[in-house]
Length: 441
Image (cartoon, rainbow, N blue to C red; front, side, top):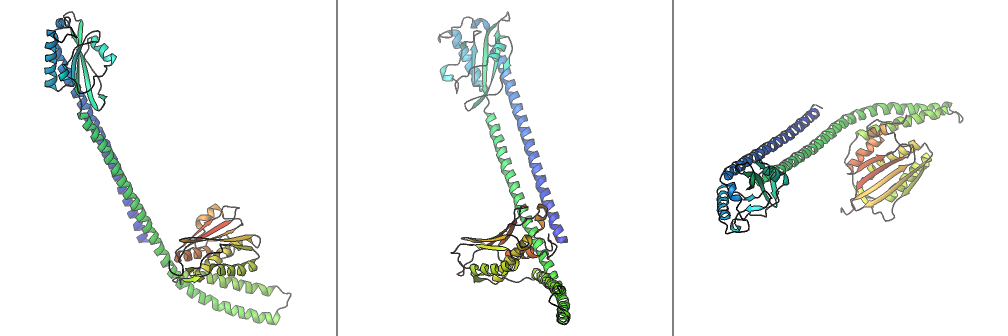
């Protein structure tokens, strides 16, 4: 038990470490995301500030009086050529995406020559931005995306001496570094997902390992308990069976000397002696362990023998349903017979001589399934978790060892035993055994 408690403590520590790791990972991801947003905000602010400085300087280089004489469609116009060269130099020196001048009517007055054209199609400006710029404000758009490119746009009014707007300078700057931030953000999400998966996978492995370890420890503890129980059972059985034999012999003598055919009293003692002997036998069977002796058996013959030996005794209608071509297989016949007898005995006691038990057999390539169903009262839901506990019984008589012995024997044969018993709908016990033919296949 101390070792068992130590395992549980180790399990709690391991899960605590995993929980703390998960929280730290979540906190690190949140900090990284927060820091990423701070960097993004800083770059946006810095780009907007840079564009504002560029338009303020450029506006000072534009003479509003020149704009009144510009003929946009005339590429030979000296004013157009001058401002094209000016804008081209400003674009080249500041690594801009595009730069051009709009008229108050929102028509392009001066734009870059075709050889200095933008790398992607010019987009339509937002009406609010143009309206504010025409109203005398320097305005900057939010970060925008067109195709695969990101950019930011700043507009500034070109005003004359009367503070009248003669045009609007439009400057666009690329923001490709935001793609790097986006890639970093995507990488952070992928890394977090992979790390989270690893943590959950390790948690599952630890859960599975601790579950198996605790199960093994429970089995070892039960085995040690069975060994001690077996030693005690052998001693107790010897001490009890000798007095029982004396009582039985004395009863026989008294019955011969004083018994009369109509006297029912002498039938009680043999019945109780038989019950005590059966209880001692169950006790010994539960405590005793032995290796299965696997031999080829004929399940038809075994079930037929069980049916004849139990149905006539209890008065319960026992029916057997199995395929005609069921092949022989290898198992320990004595263990299998004991399992089936224990289950049928429970059904007989639940039916109390009035009901039906159906034994069904089905075979699969790797598994043999034997189902035993009765139409008895079933089992209460609160009793289901304890039906395999040793010495637990819902009946006034009996040792409460039948199902415990049967499940242990099923495990020794490499199979499983399960019970379904909805209240009022009978009980279905299913025994599944691995198929091992006589040839060993």
